[in-house]
Length: 274
Ligand code: ZN
Image 1 (cartoon, rainbow, N blue to C red):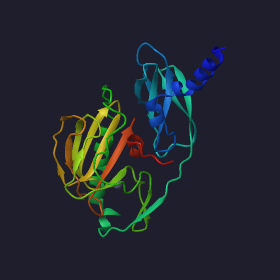
Image 2 (cartoon, helix red, strand yellow; image 1 turned 45 degrees about the horizontal axis):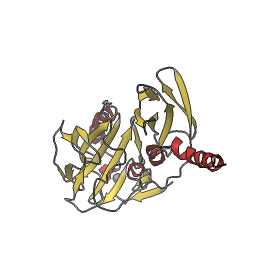
Image 3 (cartoon, protein in one colour; image 1 turned 30 degrees about the horizontal axis):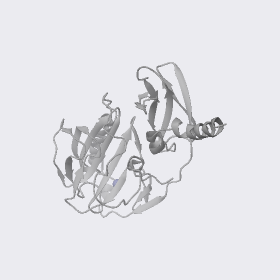
Image 4 (cartoon, rainbow, N blue to C red; image 1 turned 30 degrees about the vertical axis):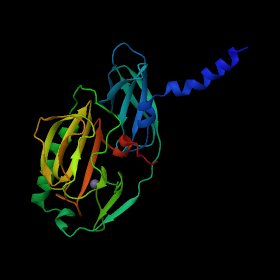
């Protein structure tokens, strides 16, 4: 007779077992979000790709492999697929997400409609940054629940449709934190410094590779405190908050990229709002 309560308890426990902590934290399958796809059990890590790009694959709870898929803002809601070990395909659903609009006034019209010389510079810088985002190193990220890179409240959210002096430009590709000039910026997880620059739009910038295509970019810094190739432990200071590049005042702009898709960093600090 005691078997029935036990069976009920087991059945109730099943959904919780089937979905681990990382899946619950990160699975936000919307444009600009993350899809966690169950790859099932296997003795070695499966290799998975999305739109031809290698994916972050981890072993969750010692039970199953999962692929953590970055979904670009441009992805169409509906059915999407990943490829596993070059043979099987797994489908997942992408839901809708509404992104608000933001109107910004800039005194420097060059930052809205750059002249040909600046356009050339911007193109070159974009290519350099895209190459950094496409790097894929085999290391496992030290932590997928990231630390906040600065002390300070969140300001502009990810994905805002932005109008500079009334003209629509690229949507907001990262998350902003309000913080005073000089506030230390810390690595939200361990990683290697793969690119440094002083860019037209992003100002003084640091790229950190956390492993398997998970890459952070920190922008508008007033100072950079690391060198190319540095291995940063979790929490290491990499620079200081500033307002270099296209910024209306001191703040930290933080991008998170996964499989070359810029996604909402709020997901990784447990601050995602649907
Ligand atoms: Zn920003």
